[in-house]
Image (cartoon, rainbow, N blue to C red; front, side):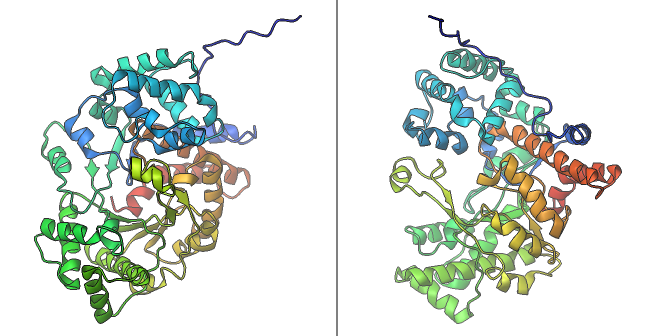
Length: 478
């Protein structure tokens, strides 16, 4: 009998230097050349979720799991889909003991095959090889050795948050913050003479606009207390939001972010807005009335952006916390969110009719319904001076979706009306991997335009450089 082949327990893990470039040998050399022009340029990250406190306090990361697994819902959701409980990964548990952190890391490595073909595999591999020097493939057999390698690195000064910020060449990092946040971490960074980076807050008022949500009245009262105003009537509530926006602007904010079930901006009359607001305060608002007031409040956010200059970014159409028991046990942002369809053209007509050509208004539209890229978002960006097409986001932050985005948007809106790449991540060490992926894919797409005779090579160089350096600064007024 022929013996079964021996399978090595420590297979090599290495990054292909030509990864994500076109397979066509006539395109690959040019794609490589274009990528080399932007590979080492600083990262501009105008929308993300890394806490500013990590950098203000510069506290060492405690363990590999808390850094690479627990905060990354891209990682945890796929493990959950394959039968792994979120509790086994440390989700929602606070600081982990060393045995629990190691056990969770073993689960990740033992399920490495789960990530084949996904962008999550690309990011994880790039982090392990490029940041921590891991050269063996994750598996059940190699898990402890990899854990020890990463843990040893995290115990050194070179892997503290600030040192990594510099190593990643981050020029701008935006956080996402509640309007009632005092922004003390941002203030601490600004006042620290040893800190030279740029970390800016982002105004995220969703919970205060969802007037039909449980607990909204408590939230509104907290807003009033924080803003130092009264919110007994609609005018007072709007004034409280304006005051908090001013607070954020004073701490460096350049944008206000919004994520609701839709982006309708149907405007109410002042009398109707006041009537519905008073019903919300008394708890007598119907679900339909709550939606109507929320849509009007989104119009108000656009009106405020036209006055204070905060860029209005929209991230709509997500069925959040789809599995109620998971939300009740572990909270939000653990991977239980699912995309739904979105509509922009009619939904934004009231807002854009009022402010779409206002010189002080700017809007960046994101979607996870990619059917809207060519049908709605690109045409809007291709007409309105204020509108930019946001980069592929969340479930579309993947190689094939990014390629489709470029083809869908560029022909209608060009390169200059796109936002630049947005990493939108809580996973700190994945930031350079995500931006690197986008730069490689854009280099390949632009190389194809040269091959088609649609761009000259010198133009191609300008395009790939502007996508990294100019577009995010233009779109977000950085």
